[in-house]
Image 1 (tube, rainbow, N blue to C red):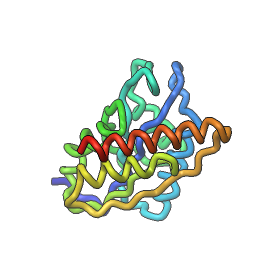
Image 2 (image 1 turned 120 degrees about the vertical axis):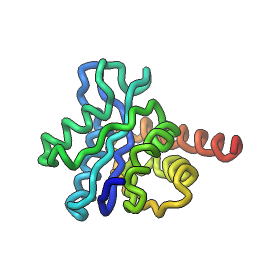
Image 3 (image 1 turned 45 degrees about the vertical axis):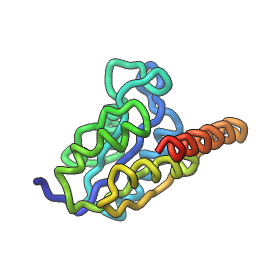
Image 4 (image 1 turned 60 degrees about the vertical axis):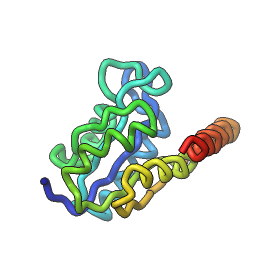
Length: 164
């Protein structure tokens, strides 16, 4: 088993066909950097593989998150291998084998404020044995776009709760 005090998990979000991170992805990266400045001895776990709704390039979304973190001064050895997920359910499930290598590490999940409820439900369900803290980025999108995303999250969370 490896050792680290904690792990900051950045949940995936869209990038374009050239691999440029969306504003949501950049906001989440910035929030992860805020946490990393508070906890410089924590490692960072990027999530995100491929999916029609967020990444259709030949590289995992987590690759682009890693590149942004390195560009912003994070040491390569701090960034863990990507959990190549295609949705939030997989963010939690595919993080498990990586996080199990660090059984005593504190977890900080970074996501957008509109996404926190569903992320919290899924990560607490996947890791009932861990204490998890959530750190959210503020999303700067047009009001109607943000309202659509919030409504989607409410429906998705309700479905998860009902499906068990």
